Image 1 (spheres, rainbow, N blue to C red):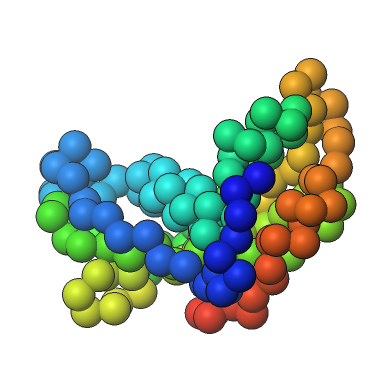
Image 2: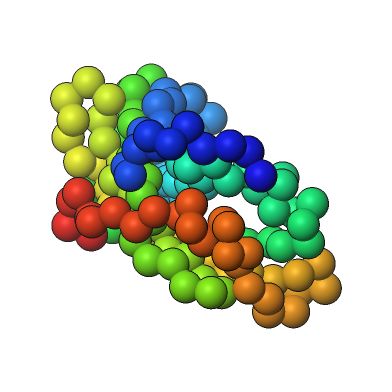
Length: 147
């Protein structure tokens, strides 16, 4: 596992910019891309906490998404700067839930909220547990926005 800095943020932010290929004919980001952006933010957040997916996989643990929910509030448009904030909402021996706030990078306007739940499986897709040292790094944060 990567070493955590010891002062990892309880809520982290991942910045991106809406690409042309992510938009529909109206120039609005297609709804499917919000989950991709959440995945980027989740991976970054875990890295900030000192947990790398690659290291988990090397240990024989995978974390597939088993639940996903997105609530759209306003559209992101082509070339908009976007920040996806991510945090851990809950963690148990086999499951971890993340929350997300997708915001306009300049105005701070809330564009969407989301949550995902992941479970631990081994390389044969059988249920397993999240290693104890990893669970300790997955610091739970209070929701900074209403999901």
